[in-house]
Length: 612
Image (cartoon, rainbow, N blue to C red; front, side, top):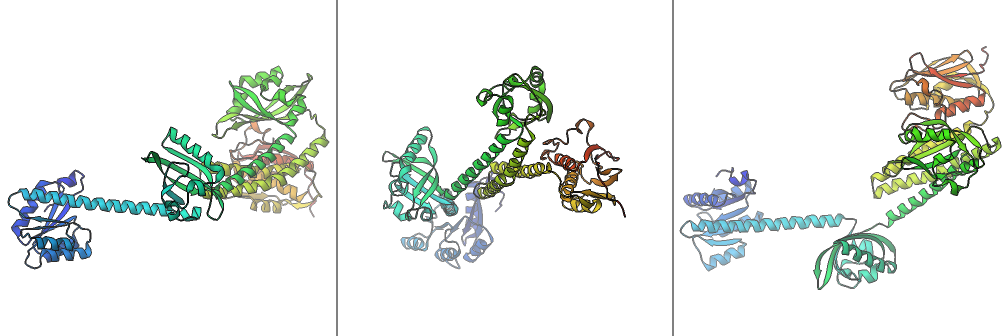
């Protein structure tokens, strides 16, 4: 018979039948009528038991139809042979010889159905109906068995337990499965048999009423609920559980709930420790914000205008206001008219758009005086990475504070960065890695990036703070040899260093190393792929040049300002460190264009060591 049936073409699952009868004409006739009766039928025929057994090894069959009396073996013997390898395959005995003894023997042998042959075509309709019922029943049992197996596999691999219980304060369990004993210390039988009550014996006494009220409130709004609570295990250990469930039926006037419970004790512990460490780190940064030797203001946007959300002590002390007078006030109200106009016309909008702001601003003090400052402003983002305001830093160019106070604050700043911030940051990074093992969420990616950013800032801020100190003992330094060693300490990739000097200079070796490494890093960061960096001598100093993209004239004066950077991930302190190291030696440093069109940093006022 053809396998290209209407059932195949229409996408229905076919029913493959093997009909065995030693009457060739009858099996062909029966196959024809069966396939006409139902398009799903695909009938294979055999005229002996041996041929039928061969067909079973060669072809997938959904049902066997067999005569009883055949020349080689009878239908019962055929059934017994089939059952040796196919214990669930439907087998219908379709025979002209019918008797109670044959029927009894067939049933004992495991026949699926027993049907006597009749005259007329109606017998084929009856046979088709019996085949369809037998196959559908077998397929349903197989599907149920497979679904049950999958469910059992799923439950056995879940990190917790599933349950079915009645919705009353004692939460009596009707069925539990999974890691019940690992979670609670009690067996399935103890919970299902009522020896142990979930609501009375397992649920923590302090959480029973709270959990009951929370579940009932959730069910009043929806069929589902979830919550976190404590349990007390059989050995008295307190654990934190997370549960999600829903109403599935009603029994004797009470809702029946089904759900899942898992242990979150370790995860909550790590999260709370991470929160504690983060709060500690934020406290340290708050201290840094308050004690920074510059005026700092955090603003929020209201109707397109900047409103002060926060400010540091330096801001209120410099201007002479009380903090209560400053918080929630418009920033523009503290500016002189000219600065107020710059701010409201386009200055604030430019800062919100991400433009680096370095402009002069004048404040009016509480007693009517004027404070001249240089503004540095950057956008401020919320948790959704939306710009909601700015962080504005103001440098008092009049140097109203004494140098001694600035020195004290700078020393405290370096101490905070070096000791009080690095340790909690390391702990926060470690805790983040542990939290990722339990819950790998995209929010932890933002936390990790923030930690990496903070680490870079700490390193650069510490170097910047210390680079303002005086130099140590000057010595003869081979400029070429030191340049080669510094180059080996930066990730140069496919970049190239060319040294065109053999001179030695008088310098503090460690401070000069800082200067060279920062100039090399700047060239690699901004010069582009394959950049070539050249170190050479001038009449009164040396230069570091590259053949990269260069620095536009409009920003050459700004590149040495602390915090200025055109790179997305840059800290903006590298060139400031270069300038401070040069100042500490009594040198000057300027930026110009190199012969190749890149950047060229010229350090002058350097003392060379006389050549032998």
